[in-house]
Image 1 (cartoon, rainbow, N blue to C red):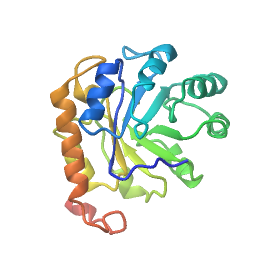
Image 2 (image 1 turned 90 degrees about the horizontal axis):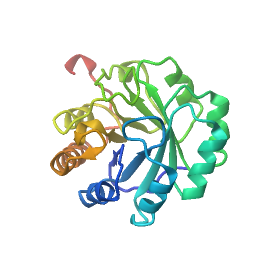
Image 3 (image 1 turned 30 degrees about the horizontal axis):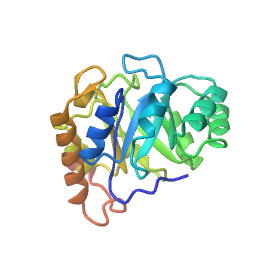
Image 4 (image 1 turned 135 degrees about the horizontal axis):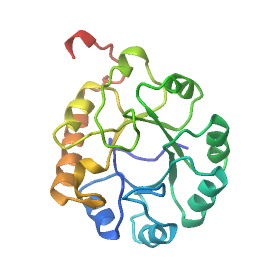
Length: 224
């Protein structure tokens, strides 16, 4: 199921507190992400349930899982009321389909260089998140995948994005949205208000200034 969002999609991920969730929303985030996989930003279902009760209904809540059992993913998502789950590991297609049949929306994350990207896109899933070689590491990567493939699945750009770099990615590549975690932090799991505000503003400005036919126009990659 696709999200009902009217503007360019901006997700602030790795949120660990109600304060950071509400702050991100206040600056215009479309979505907030909560990491259930082992991480310095890992949160519990109970923590997230308490936060979700205080979020505006139009804000998308995403639970991030990595190589978790599909039954557990579905249980957490539906028990606490997540709008979407993000599969950010080496989950099989069988696992992805199992989850997709039982939750509202699935975001599938792959390294931008992965051979699985084309296969995934051909199956018409909800959203594709393109990350670096080590998904979730916050390391930047290239975007030459857009030279090799024209996507029909909406693409969310991720991996090493910062307030300084997000505008160029949005301006130059046909991405539907962006995702950030470490690039807007003052410490692991602690969001910096100034960085969050700048990231969202720069992403939205770049999206708002793209030509109306941006997603359909041919690219001259020699100029990038």
